[in-house]
Length: 124
Image 1 (cartoon, rainbow, N blue to C red):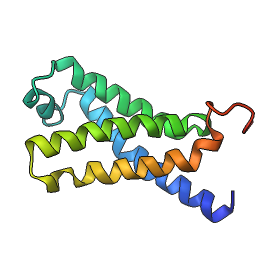
Image 2: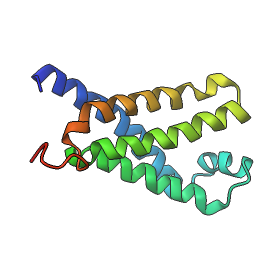
Image 3: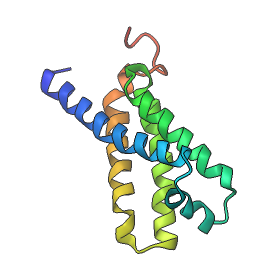
């Protein structure tokens, strides 16, 4: 991978890991604003904590090359849920950040798929 491409991939990973990690920590700390959406959808309280754990785990996984594609794929799923929430419950413009993070996660999946654990023998 060229040096510029590698730097671009790492930039995308950091730009994705920071907000996902922050959101995950916030949910795990029980910040009520971050749990309101789950309440609005009628989901149990534990689900917000579960999503927070998934977000924090994905943020850490993004930083490990063999796990980054899988972590980004998990983020895609979470962001699909977030976009779906915004489509159903808020003005569409409120879903733009989730859409951007989801697209960034898709880019990371494709950029890091050759390094991933699901393609054995492709990287050390």
